[in-house]
Amino acid sequence: MNIHRWIKAGWPPLVVVILLLFIWQLAVTWGGTADWLLPSPLKIWRDGTTDMPRVWMHMWATVRLMCIGFSVGAIGGVLVASVLHRLPFVKAGFYPLLILSQNIPVIALGPLLIILFGFGLLPKLILISLVCFFPVTMSTLDGFMQTDRSMYNYMQMIGASKRQIFYKLELPHALPFLFTGLKISATYSVMGAVIAEWLGGNVGLGYYMILQKSAFRADREFVAIGIIVILSLLFFWLIAGLEKLIIRWNVKRSS
Image (cartoon, rainbow, N blue to C red; front, side, top):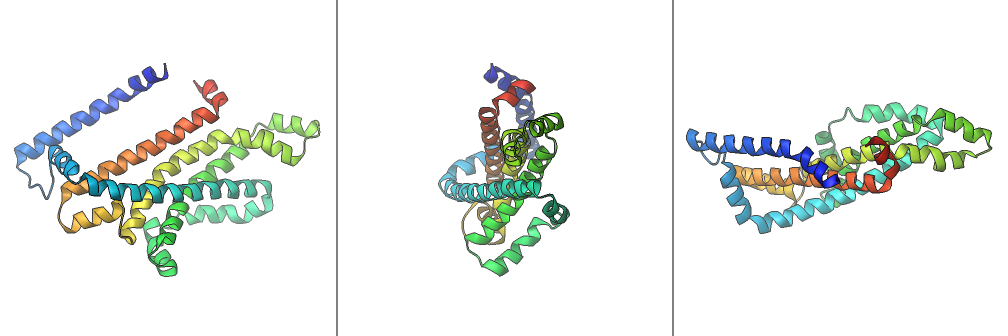
């Protein structure tokens, strides 16, 4: 049943993508556009398969980087959200700073992190972790604040401690919100990894794109872009699948 529903929901965007690629192919073929300026989808596919061993190596470097950064950012976001929720006076001081931190462009943090920590792995992981940290923190905090007040009052009446209320009521109630933040962070982690590789690196899809840009190989840049999109979708679907496995009660209620 779920597979049938996924197929039913997935075919309209698939048809649109195929139609757009067909129009793109016709426009480039009939317009005589130079390959270095705008290659056709067929040329992108041919060059992608030809250069696939090198692309594969760079892709796995990016996957490794984004998985580590995502894990650090997600765990840190859950921990910080839990602390801020349990300590309202700390939340009053740090919550506005969390909001203000999002006004700093990610691309501007990269050079600063490189100056502070060098060109190694650490500044890249910090950048990705910061990108993933905010959605998880804010979504989890919102989940804590949306806890059913009647159940909260009931647990207080029967003598439950704050620790019991947190683990048995507030944390389970916040899980759907947490997974919303995780799905957002999953897509952001790919973007953060590519930006980190742009700013300083010798491997990864971001570095691969810089090399192809210098060589005026737009076709291979499009190959990298396509892989980045696929990675984002796969990571998003992975988190969505984990959500359905872990929060069965919420999925059943929402279906």
